[in-house]
Length: 201
Ligand code: GRF
Image (cartoon, rainbow, N blue to C red; front, side, top):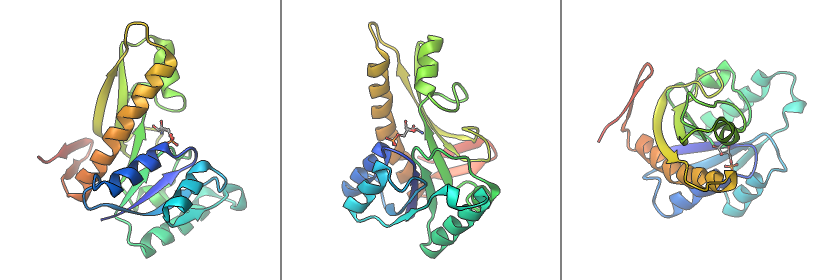
């Protein structure tokens, strides 16, 4: 079962997926490609270190999003990728990828969606004063963090909490949940029916 990870930045989630795959924590899934829109981002270096193939591009070199996505789609097809895993990929996707990988593309977001979509979700939840927040893995559609929910994990606020401490707990929850969800897909346990996503036991 072949996965491609898309990322734009630090790549700590990419690293967690790599570590999980080495520890057999991704089931039968292997990471065959990193797609990155910022060739100088730390995540690209992580891929090189790990010997993972990369498709690096600069969106400014293309007139339209559809143009680079068509190139990405060709790469994915050539490598027979089964699942796209967005891990801090900071761009919306067009129909070129969304339609082709409907139900086979997931994203992780650091809030309990539909609360706090978009950027700085942890800060948004903190400023709002919520008592519980968390992380969400969802299927990707054309919107920003709007697709059907696959899995969520709650992260409660604590007495004497700080934004930094909360961020750390959220990121720890992401690193636990995301590899688990990838392994469910690899095992064929995720059934999608419109917005209802069922994970078979
Ligand atoms: C993560 O918090 C993820 O939930 C969000 O972007 C962040 C990416 O961090 N979508 P990293 O690049 O994986 O370290």
